[in-house]
Length: 308
DNA sequence: AGGATTTGACCGAT
DNA sequence: ATCGGTCAAATCCT
Image (cartoon, rainbow, N blue to C red; front, side):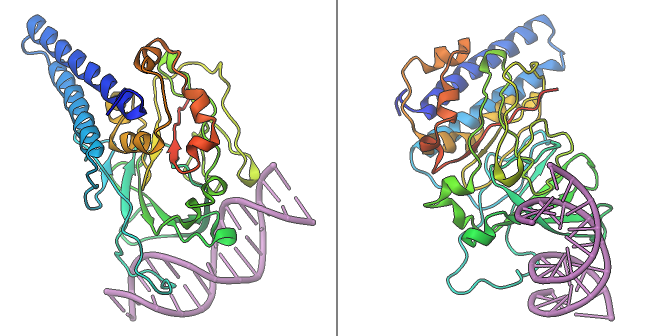
């Protein structure tokens, strides 16, 4: 891997972060051996290590593991989540079997931004659940016959968290991916560690009560002001084969997670070798990259920041 | 007016 | 028989 790829940039940054976290842990241990903050430093270290491991694994061409749920709020979220395998050949069943395999994620965020435009088509009270389950399908089902759907269920124990199950493949993302995907995020303000972007709100009635960026009707996108105030909450989502979302400042390390890494690898635009330095001083040219539909046509990459 | 969402009904899976 | 996923008419919103 070379520094020519975003993955390489991420790897180097994460390695630096890993060293910093280790240093922080040492400092905390030295100043206060019983400090509970050491665990925090250790957690950061673990996150960095996971990202690095994943990056290297991805670089060696390893495939992702079987589907699993990613818990954004949990202390030890799994490193990866994937789409369900492609449906078997033949006409798709009109109704999927109960408990059919799905890609699930639990997000603590108020927004559910995954780079796709979803249209709500149903809502149902579910036994044993206080909150109704919401049903969405890809907005491009009509034009492109995309069969991807998702189910959003507010979790019982964490009302602010949503469990989202994804079914089916986005057939609209192939040759006409650009038509399916919203334009890439417009603003990235790395200089203040706030990552700006368009937030989907998915247009389809996603549970996005606090979405800070609106999506204009018809799939158009508007962007947050570049001068928006910095945020302590960072939302970042990348989508390779499934949706990802991190919306917790404490999970910034998770932010550059496995999906991000694979995403960046998939993107593989060429960056200069000084990218890390540029990143750190806030001058890294992400914005132009993110605004270049050519780089993102085949990608499902979304970066979101909620300004508070 | 056209598109998006809501909501009751329908129907297949269990 | 019940549950849950989808349909589609009604309604809302821009």
